[in-house]
Length: 73
Image (cartoon, rainbow, N blue to C red):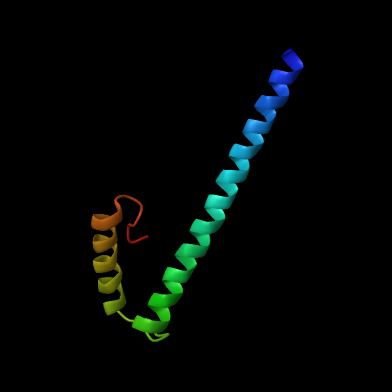
């Protein structure tokens, strides 16, 4: 019976790790898409000072709507 419990614990831990990896991958892709959209549609592929202002405003709006995790960084 002890062996069964260990095997089930191992399955649970492996599933937790898989979920964490999937979430991290999806978040990385989301952040990349957001950055790409800002770069192409707002900044027009150019670096500009007003880009900082856009990021600050967008960060504030997303934080209000979705909570923590949408800082300027």
